[in-house]
Length: 334
Image (tube, rainbow, N blue to C red; front, side, top):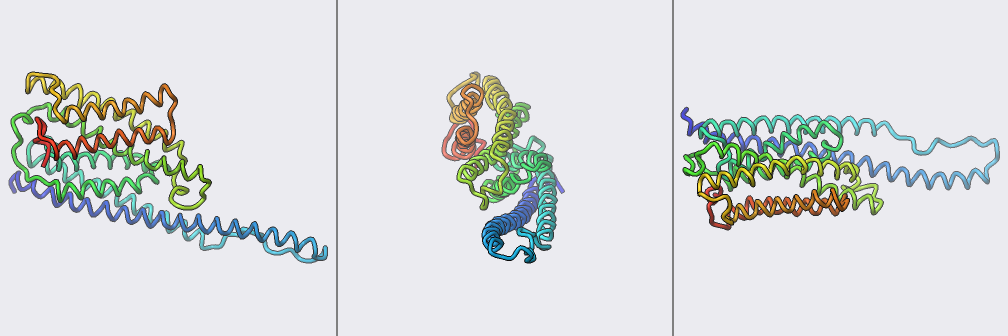
């Protein structure tokens, strides 16, 4: 099997990983459904217990002193433990499938790199699968915590959509890259962008869930999707840490090293190319987020909204600029 065939077959490996992510998400959804049902049952039982206590108090006032007492309120049935075990089993299956899908995706990315004999992020297809791999690894690390396990449910869905989109609409056949990309700068400059993209994606999921969790807490909800999420403070802290890690990587890679590579390739550090402009806009958006938290004390939903605006600029820089605009970075499109 020649190298071009290895690179071509990597697409089918990526498709297998996509199916693995889908199966993992379905297992996580089943686990979340069981926990949601348990919460509703507990809430209903608590309301019933309060009514029974009120009725029992009234009856006790009228009953003789030597009458037998009734059964204690709020006793849980044996089915609750069975539901917990079933949810834990489904969660374990979901995490196992998530890890397996990540391993398969890593194999697909490696095959693409070996087949093309270069870093596997020279176009949108390769950038997408490598960025999804980075996000998957981050989520696998986070899944060891309680907060990370809840966040992973929705992270798997986003990764599934990213990898599925890459393997279908964004796929590009393996081949030589343009002379401008035949440089070690491709590994450094775009590699940093891939890592930052993966971290920003994880942070965006956390920020979105933080907003939902905070609003559910403000409205006093004890059931529903918002009530199933971790505490909004914990989510806010996690989103900030992820952004604080990704921001200097974005600063160093796409901006500083990108300017140096532009000077080496085109004889100028800055030329107002659409990709350069939107990379700067992304940097400004996340700089505003970090600045607001550090100086104005912005936390919670206000800070999360700014973080999501920043991620919106990341997505437009990736999809919008590559597809809609023509420039010196047009080779990164379809």
